[in-house]
Image (tube, rainbow, N blue to C red; front, side, top):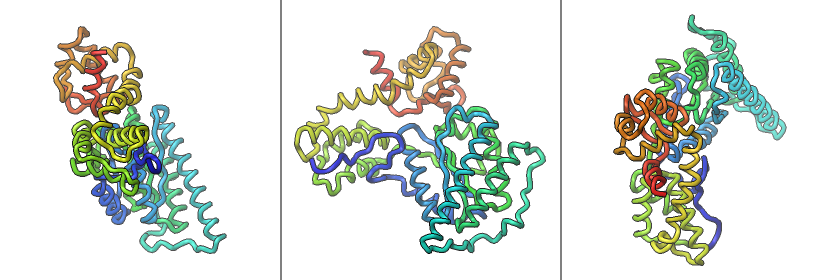
Length: 386
């Protein structure tokens, strides 16, 4: 087999060929070109394995091309208080200011002048931030910190600053998101060029609304889903360009039937098929190879992708989650879970909420849930037969 395996299953790894996301990237570029007059805030949501983090990486590259600077952070449960969020974002801003200043010094040393930005029609010395009467000290302090960072960026020839936060659904305390959203919104009302991108599981939209009721108007929603049929096919086929390796049409059809268009699954199936061909010393990916590797793919998914999500739950939560695998699907109807479990109705409702808080389920609507990982229901059914 010539060269390295061209498929990249993993967390946030940009594939060799990024399929099916051109519309999202076009919209983001268009939004930046309309900012700051029209604030460019984006809420990216989707199941695990659909490529949300990869999309954020593409956003970063577009931002650089358009003259903006970015700072991205993967949020954790430890960030889930307003005080910690203020400290964390302040530290990000301080780091970004140092990076901007250092880059400017390097450019001057190599003889490249800092570009002057003509797009801004306001001078930062003239900006007077107007705070909502209900704003507390945290909101004001964070807004002033972000403002100082934007001023540094613009002073060094950039159009503005974009703050990006991945895994934002982990922030359960409304105050954590509220302080960030309020600070950015305050700046944007004065046409300060700052943008906010938050990314997470489908539950993120509801958590933003609980934090600030105006977020449905503040953010453009990008719901990242599975790839359509042709995009999924190209995601599997195109990485083979230039490798000398070919793939059979009937194999592509078979893989498409198994993966449901999920980008992570495309990369996983492709990587395993490539490795099998390498071991067999062949340069054609065929249905025969699929028959060999499919049991290994299933074991890998169960061990690495699904089972850890079960084990992070308490025994009582695991019991309820396992019961969902015996219920009609989709979606998961709480009434069905109550019928399938010996636990009380009140206990099940509490436990379903806890499972959702752990990021294994998300609430679709009242009385209905779904899994955050594609194929999880089938996994639970397999698990029950072992």
